[in-house]
Length: 183
Image: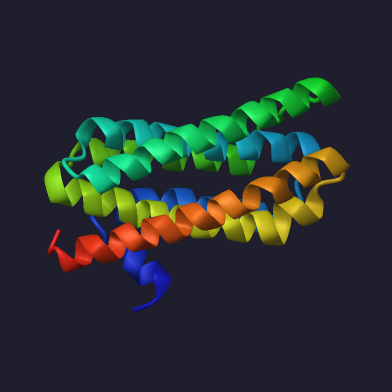
């Protein structure tokens, strides 16, 4: 099964696919400017913060709640670093097709997740987190870091990249454990 087929087959297929495909398509289509990169970073982190907060309130699973809390904490920290940097550089994040697509995909994901409960919620949330973090990593590596003109912005992206890798691996571990438990 291809990645796209796998995404489409999940309960959140449409919501996850809109956000992730939008990120991939919009980011890879053109190299963003530094203000656009700032908006993409802030929006991508906020999408994951919002999903994490929802998981904290809905998940019955302590490992999923622990992961969600890590997403909220870590992504809030990245956003604070991004806000501090854009303030220091006197740069205003510029909304763009990628940041708008991320916001729309995040909203669709939240709407779909809100309809689920129990093991179905956990599976959908974690499946989306795996796909989302892989796509964000691809965008960071292939577009955002190479496109960043400001050395401090580029350094921030390089600095936070290992956290996204760790998040992806953590999400994959939870995904595997959910699969084994039948949930």
